[in-house]
Length: 414
Picture 1: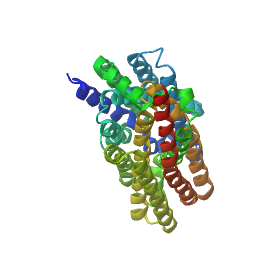
Picture 2: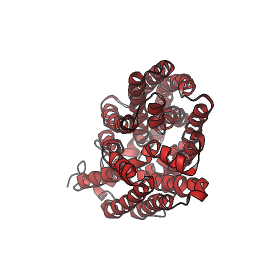
Picture 3: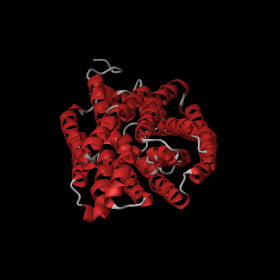
Picture 4: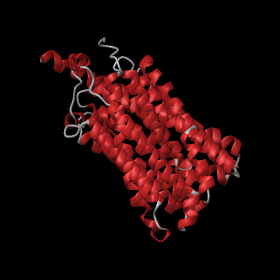
């Protein structure tokens, strides 16, 4: 074993990708929502609300995992997340039509919380084990969610097409249960040699902050607002990909393809942005990601206005690229700037700051669609939001440099 390449981390990464393949099914909601809406008698805004709750609980789950990290082992948190996810899908599969509004409690709350727990547990483990290739490794892990768009999502969509959405949800619940129980044993603490090296590394650069001290840093808040804006855009459109395709005349196959390709672009981009972050640094990556966000919303607004499906879908996929970058850079920013000792807790706190985006942007998209029959006005409103993210990416440079000079001065004084 070496300090930089501990034995067994490849198996850990493979298991994490398998888990994320299943977690990515959360993003396929728009493919099932039409059938659920018809059976339960909801309108588009009501069915979107269930997904909005799920996205909100996703960020809360990440936060809770971080808060419990000193009291519960990663394996126990992974087990809790598995039971919540699986139980939520199974409970929704058996939900009587007369109790349709309860879908927010059977699906939105437990599935979102469970995905959040599993997401943070596995991400924190990968970040700890791959200190030499952190960006690339997290990109590979997060690719699992993207690959769900061409693996688990089409499979479960086919089950829904043949047997109905309830059978599909039951199958998803059992799949999550089996994979979660089979992989949780792969979660192990990093070898002591690696942990010691990480502690020394953090002490040398003076960037090993706990959550209360992290919250006092302006560079943390500039990053969080940057991430909130871009994640909000991506989350909102991710939940509506099939609806956008349907609005522009796309049939069932086109709608499924829209969801699958959106999720795939989201996943593949995470490897791209993770590698660029390793090579170029966080700040250039943040500016580039925001620039892609501006371009995607500008193009999407133009093509939604003309009703051109062949232009709107590629613009949606470009949105997925920006969204994938915002989520990937988040994991690397928190660790590289504020250290690894409190990473799991700090990442949970950082995720919680995106709660307004996950709740507000998704709900706003549903309300705009209900009022106007299109997402045109929503996309137009997201152009200034993406421009603000671009400005914050540029502003983050001076703030981060000031923080690092202060941290280096504290080390010298110590």
